[in-house]
Length: 268
Image (cartoon, rainbow, N blue to C red; front, top):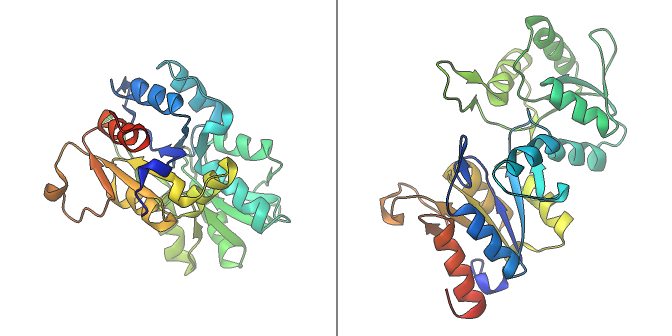
């Protein structure tokens, strides 16, 4: 069965809302990671946020006492890199909508950020906190001329504690779709390709993988789309969660860890 935890070899975890909330690490996170390590189970952190680089996240996790290797962090930016390199290797010149961090990381992987006058091979849309009207118009112009168009993730709004709304990639997509009459290839959660890429990199099969998260229609939809065990982290009992389709629902990572130990070793 899909949720046979005795076969579990790798756990993929959402970040904000699953292992921490804002600047506060959940008390169950570090013991859960130690439990996975003691059981020989690998793990990867996954985020749709394209505004931070892998190195930024490694540094951010380090301040919580979480020390990981680069291969244990996967972002929607890396998903875009993998998608272009495997499916469109000739598309090196990109018209990018994204933060400076995003564009710099894409360039580190061999892509070139074209200026406003040069012709690109493709248009790539990501979260952009400094998007200009001129650049948005130019992206629409290239999209209307049939250029390959991909987007890093579908999130319409970026969570913030500030008194404002942070328009995210999905809202930029909606604007460009309206004016161009086209839709992009949308990567990131819940597109299964992002999870399939993690499984490929770690040499595990869907039945050996679990996806943990706190959001049904991103994290758990991703799990269902990729055919892996979906684990919903929620303080509410399963029967109280409308439309809950998770394979496993737990209060926190500690409870999930106990279930893994019981399946693997016959004890919690």
